[in-house]
Image (cartoon, rainbow over all chains, first blue to last red; front, side, top):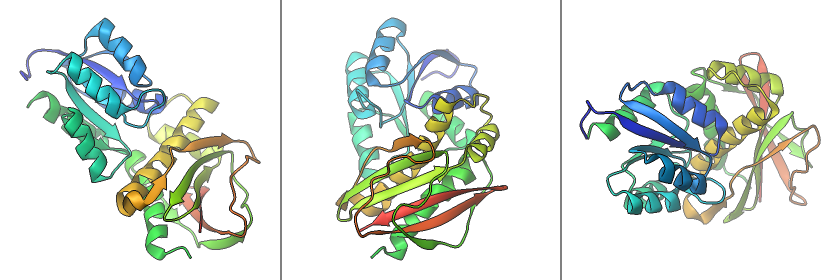
Length: 125
Length: 148
């Protein structure tokens, strides 16, 4: 991705605290927040309206979990960039998410620096 | 019987949350054994465990501690819902750590959050609970591990 253009960001997490935390802590001028979603179904609805380029995705969520949502988003937009942000710290979960089409994985809890490094890797690849 | 490594995984999952999210480490007090259901604080995040082991693990914290933790996280919403959200996030981290260390022999549930002084916490008949005080700043929470 080209670092000079701007990217539409969607934050998906069932925790209000985490959604606000990610929004507050990311410090990229090129990211424009287009909205947040509390589960996979809401994320798909928001995707249809706002067409995000970059997504932060929790995994454990009600109604539709993050793994299923990643698969659907990648089907709809293969170029989408997805950073999984999850408390699930086992390797098998990370591998499953990457196989579905995620581009990065960050464990909760995280520092601002870790978040921004992970987003930088995502949008500057 | 609860093994030391198992206990360590749950404790580290808890203290790690404070160290990373609030940038201020928590310390642990002297653990003790409790018969029956130990008293809980205002907000409690419960993880059910089945498979190789059976039982519950829960993190319970007073509102005052959660308020300061939220402040340290630059949060400015201190509503009941946000408190529930936070205690759920701590329990989520404990659960994630356990999945990493114990593998798929342990089936670990999505955390359930309870509020109030006497929530209904599932208790295994005849089991004893390990209670680990989690001290952070001037506040104290508890990590309770009750496994068969």
